[in-house]
Image (cartoon, rainbow, N blue to C red; front, side, top):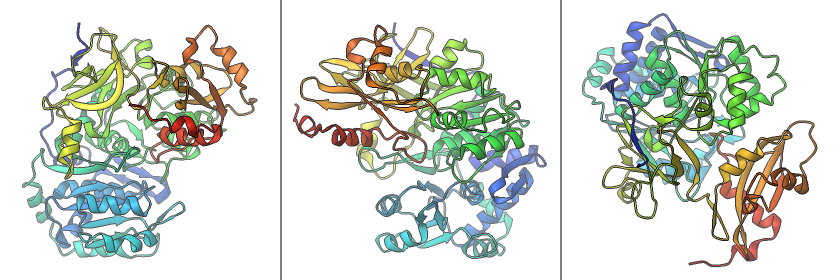
Length: 550
């Protein structure tokens, strides 16, 4: 049998723009809470949120923004980000999400690549001075006509002027623009992580993201009575689609704990706002479960949530069900280029499948496991590349036909670069990245398998496994572990003894390092390429790294 499945199709796709869908929710639930942001003193109903969205939309019309213009947003999780998200959607202006962690070269590239006409930006974020960085790069961005800085509290500036300009534009002009839009129009550009080469601008349509949010919520059984905690960054698909848009499709409340992820503030928001659901990447849930306030936080209001963005250890999933009081928590799997979700577990799945797989195909999505060498569909249980096609696949990489052709086959399959297996019931497991797979003396070693095993060690809080160069075997296995608080550092001999008779000899790490943290992206993904580079230097493996191979 072939590892090829299609998700349920009994519930039809939504054929709406983001703006139309949002206004339908406002009409249905005008007085329900829509957005809570304690760090900015925001507590708005859907009617209030819509009023503020329209003020921004009218301001952008007053500045002459046309359908298809690109407007960048470079900021952490602030209310202005949410307003820009829905205002641009109503106008057909393509919002360009820019990573808050970008430095000058990355910022200039992001603005130049898609020809941003304007940019909404914070003045600073953590140690980054956005004003100064923009001064450095503006001369290199000829298409950039204006920068709208978000005002500091009590200091009216660019943002206040944008809203004031909008007072001259009647609301009827927003409504008229909305009538010209189509669900298949491009509405959002999200840059991929760019850990190997320059970031690519994945271009998504209204239809892509509104349906992905809709079916995510359908799997979660979300309703207007839910209160969804969103600590993940808005700039990422996880934040703006699986958080903000997911909530507004169903009329649920969006609860944003802080401008950037803070485990203590997130726990506080869950308790004080009686959140019923949350979306986090694994490292965020792990950080909260390790926080001193975790045990004393009232988490009884939680019912469900999603975890995704990187592989999740089975033990973490088990703790989310029990210790985190999330009996219906679900794993989601996907990528920016697929809006993002392709696979999702269900609250009705057997527990071993719900915590030990990435679920089954999302509604209206077709998935398969393909041989990366010849493109043929694999058999059940066989490792190959996870591929997907359907409504969720991006329109393409902005202004980059070659990379689009490289990513999407002529038959419409999106190549994810992830290695996976599928069982006869259609459940998939991600076993690693094609580029992360370690080849030790001709044996394929998948880091996710070893990470999952080492995570069961009682003293280990987190673990990442990488491949490092080796003169004899080509590559060797290295484990980098973070210890639980108060536990002694794991020794190599103790680790080896723990693995004995449990892992094949070639999977047992040759090197072990105990670390305090990992190099991370702003979305909580571990930078394994950077870890490998650091390991080569620390272990003196430069000679092995320099060996050329065919």
